[in-house]
Picture 1 (tube, rainbow, N blue to C red):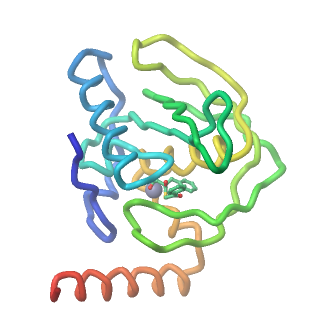
Picture 2 (tube, rainbow, N blue to C red):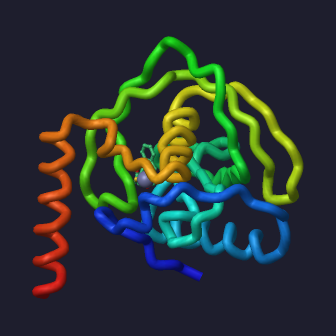
Length: 177
Ligand SMILES: O=C(O)C[C@@H](Cc1ccccc1)C(=O)SCC(=O)c1ccccc1
Ligand SMILES: [Zn+2]
């Protein structure tokens, strides 16, 4: 099912999500709904808290599947349950990030270029890898969501307040329509 995505400044986006206890059918249904919601948005990542579920699970699909090109992205769905990040590189990457909970607003965010990640997949199997590129950027953006952090929190107060004001204006015009 396509689920409603919470939008800033909704306080529910600010809670810290709790670890998943058991990887069961109910969780796999939530994961499938998260993918359907993300593809519909469209987006390249989604954390459960963004659809109102404070569980430490997130999905990513960079469209970089086997043989993908920019013209024809190929689905490459990735599931991260109870993800942990460590050993971030000194080297940083700058990326013009967006967020499905901060619609139509983009800003440059600096994050470590390479990170070490440990997580469970949709079958509960353990994985560990060093990740880089857009996957590292996206995973760190989603991990922030699990801590109740939005990408605008990494910006200057001025930029953050400008973006929140634009969101408020867009919401008012949407409601008026
Ligand atoms: O809010 C989210 O977590 C989704 C967000 C993920 C993300 C984007 C860019 C950098 C880091 C994390 C998005 O997917 S915003 C939409 C977006 O970037 C996009 C949409 C369609 C095609 C390609 C990208
Ligand atoms: Zn986001």
